[in-house]
Amino acid sequence: MKTTGHSLSDEMNMLRALAAAWPICLGYLAIGMAFGVLARQAGLAIYQIALMSMIVFAGSAQFIAVSMITSGASALSIIITTFMVNLRHLLMSSSLTLHLKGKNKAILSLFAYGVTDESFAVNLGKFLDGDWSLKDALVVNHVANITWIISTILGGYAGRFIPAGAFGIDYALTGMFLCLLVFQLRGRLYVLVSVAAGLLSVVFYLIIPGNAYVIIASALAATLGVAIKSWYMHKRKQDEEQ
Image 1 (tube, rainbow, N blue to C red):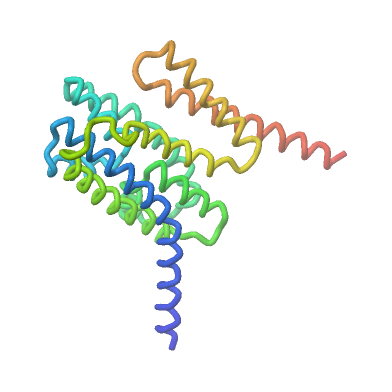
Image 2 (image 1 turned 120 degrees about the horizontal axis):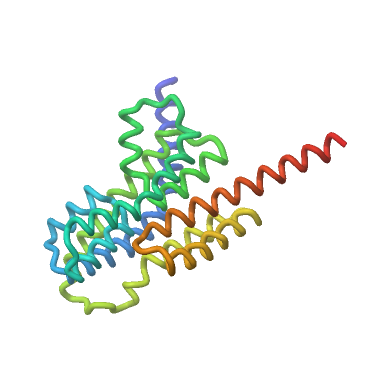
């Protein structure tokens, strides 16, 4: 009887994690196929598209890499550029570590492989709400991972039949990030930080070469958010003491 109850609990947890993952998977089907189409049109073979999705598993980096391959950039410049773009994962990982203390390092490595902007947004929200485990987060990460790989391969097969730039494919990744941003706006402070990050990104884009402006703008906006929150909490504490 206990075993049955335990199995039922595990099944419910799995269904809950799958329910959290399905919006990501739905987005990945469209974005992944868009990437596959562009990669195929850039001259990559199906197996190369599949390998890139399995080894890299970073949508924005893969789109950038394909764009640079199309423009004839060197392998070193592609590696450095995508590395700089993905430095934002340091910020995301720092946020997640608060909820993953004391966990097995091997399992954490498996979890880290599946961290993307989308899975980070979903898992962090669930961790903050409570009643969310590393096992749940792993399901979200790797169901999304499998969906991404399959969708990019499907896009690679479809790429030979779809004209470049058709159906707004070039805008697909930007649209997905805008949707993720909207879902993260849970208060005025989040809106302020988002606006600050956007404005700083534009300013730094105009004066800083390369893609470092993304990391600098994000770090400064996040620091601003922490400073404002600390000031607010301090002021509130003083008011309560009075």
